Length: 63
Image (cartoon, rainbow, N blue to C red):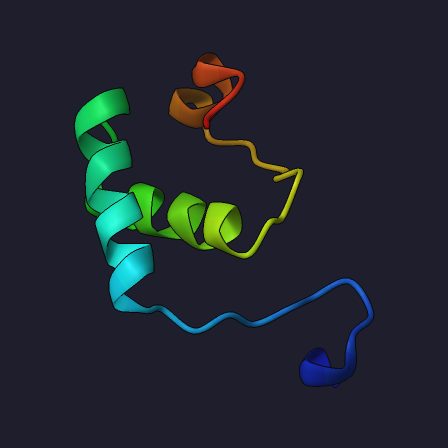
């Protein structure tokens, strides 16, 4: 069921994703999990992320 949901996508974590995640962690002071999730969105061109995480919401925009 979850794998067939039209609004859920699964992405592979690659070396490039990890590299982007490390850069985000340094640039924005993010933890490892947050930086890897966001890096995966960026490398896969996901334009919007919905969250209730106060730390991420305070950043407003990440590039």
